[in-house]
Length: 82
Image (cartoon, rainbow, N blue to C red):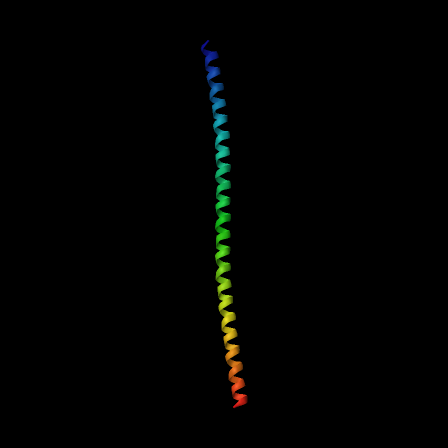
C-alpha cells in the first residue's frame, strides 16, 4: 500500500513539475516578446527623433542658402546698376 501511494505521489510530482516547466517556458517566451517589442519601439523613436533633427538642419541650411543667394543677387544687381 505504501509503495502504491509513493508511486502516485511521484507521478503527481512529475506532472506538477511538467506543468511548472510549461508555465515557465510560456513566461520566458512572453518576456522575450516584450523585450523585442520594447527594443523595436525604442529604435523607432530614435529614428523619428533623428529624422526630425536632420529635417531641421536641412531646413536651416536651405534658408541660409536662399538668404545668401538673394543678398548676393541684389548686391550684384546694385553693383551693376550703380
